[in-house]
Length: 247
Ligand SMILES: Nc1ncnc2c1ncn2[C@@H]1O[C@H](C[S@+](CC[C@H]([NH3+])C(=O)[O-])CC(=O)[O-])[C@@H](O)[C@H]1O
Ligand SMILES: O=C(O)C(=O)Cc1ccccc1
Image 1 (cartoon, helix red, strand yellow):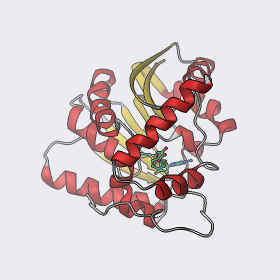
Image 2 (cartoon, protein in one colour; image 1 turned 30 degrees about the horizontal axis):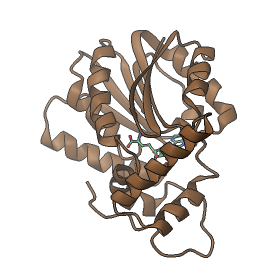
Image 3 (cartoon, protein in one colour; image 1 turned 30 degrees about the vertical axis):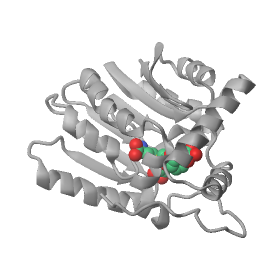
Image 4 (cartoon, helix red, strand yellow; image 1 turned 180 degrees about the vertical axis):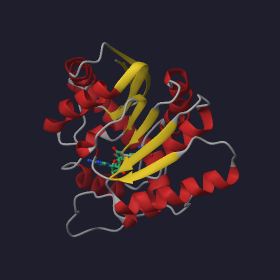
């Protein structure tokens, strides 16, 4: 994995462009996501552990918005169920190219890993195969809000009995004080990870038009509206959380 440190927002920018998953981001992405998302390594590793409980024989496990394939690699470390295969999907060509390289690296180091296919494509245009596990690890927040219910409904329709959707997201909070406190604590987390005030401020304006977090209540209601029967939060660290949604 690339060890290049994230300095993308370190210099003052005359105008901060909207955040995009381009080659510059790909180069620093492992460092960026670890220093920006509290609990990220714990979520990714345990997503593999959870997935192993829901994986059904001869089914597909989806990693939607796979970026560099961290979740796919965790699925392949933990899931031993017969006949499973992983489909990773991302619409960033730069991410997909590097993701394929990393997965080839994993293949060369370990034997008997689940087969994996990496698709460059829009998850909104994807035809889902019957699946036992669908991971949306910090991806739904980048989907246009008015498209989210339809996407979750299609995922729900593709899920096999005994399967699960695992949804990780940055949260906003309806309670003003709770929102302010957890936002401040997230800034403290970033500062503690070496980001300057300028980096934090410029990153905030880069993502504000492209990443729209929902509250836990909105997620729960939307998942139920999409046909899921049960929503169980299994992890929260500051304003980042992960939920299990059962068909
Ligand atoms: N419509 C779309 N179709 C396909 N991909 C998309 C779409 N919109 C955004 N993406 C992709 O979703 C990913 C979101 S990052 C996921 C981290 C990863 N899951 C991880 O566990 O490391 C989250 C973050 O950076 O905060 C990017 O790679 C986008 O290209
Ligand atoms: O950096 C942030 O403030 C975030 O909310 C997380 C994030 C991580 C990586 C890309 C975009 C957003």
